[in-house]
Length: 277
Image (cartoon, helix red, strand yellow):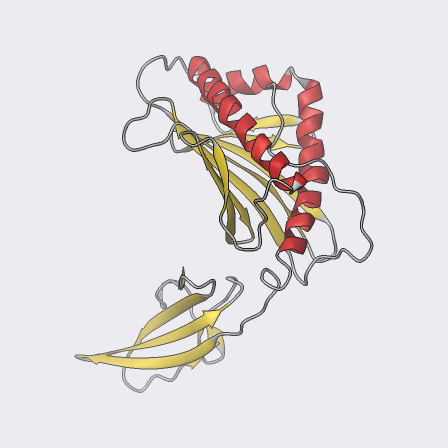
């Protein structure tokens, strides 16, 4: 594969540059179709820091657009220009990768789709892990393993592409360098830009409501206006969390203002006591 990930070169070390408390992630999602039908784009890219969309790119405009107020888009920003150029490079190489996979699948006709997710997570102790996965026609296809510089094929149909890509040892090392060095460095740069936004903490406002219908009472616990997204809502019975068969699944959704709301419900018979957690 003759391409590199969409990432600025590593930034020089800076005194006092530290991650916010907790873990953070940088993810790029690439998606597209071999033919522009069914409403699918030829290529579209989305970039996220944690759960916050910060950049988008599409084949039609061939432009990277900032999607967060803390991201600079002026031409004077070296990092933004490099990021834009990286996404333009992916616009071309995404098509190359898609047609390579199609050829190896003997899919010369019809519309087929490719999805790519790549990025990294930096933990509170400054350790990191990278991820780079391909999906083809909605199914897992290939997963890059930086520790062994090879690709894991999700099924027999992916083996031909796995073998073809593993011939390029130099590119495999560049992939590893991106995941283990460049991606964490870019994430730190973005976290610095978003300081005060990405590291904010908004505790949830919790309330419980009761709904009675016939002989069944439904208790619903709601957590409102919290950030970040990670939250665990559980009902307790006799001090023990209920399993998935007893409580309805958690439902967490964005509010539209950068915060989240969530709820979890349980149906109880009269006289049964529960606690929320």
